[in-house]
Image (cartoon, rainbow, N blue to C red; front, side, top):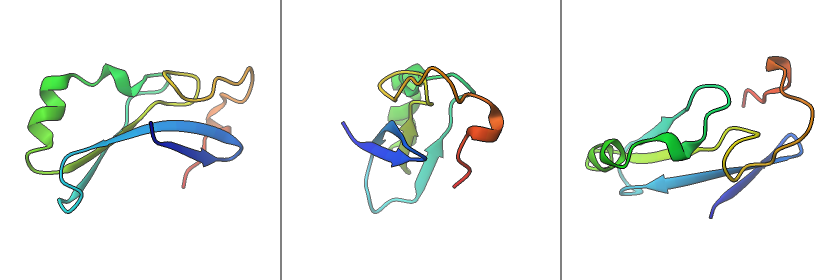
Length: 77
């Protein structure tokens, strides 16, 4: 279970496919979890890309702080 630290929060992410393939970052809508990506879609995409997806803060296996969900608090890099 890969985890990344950013702005004091732990974010869960996953990678699928060939690491030498071009990367494709999937970003679920605000408050969505990476678990919502359909397995069929991920399987198709991994034929051509290294697919990277994550759980937004407050969802899935990422940290769920009580505060800090304003758009201004979301890291941009």
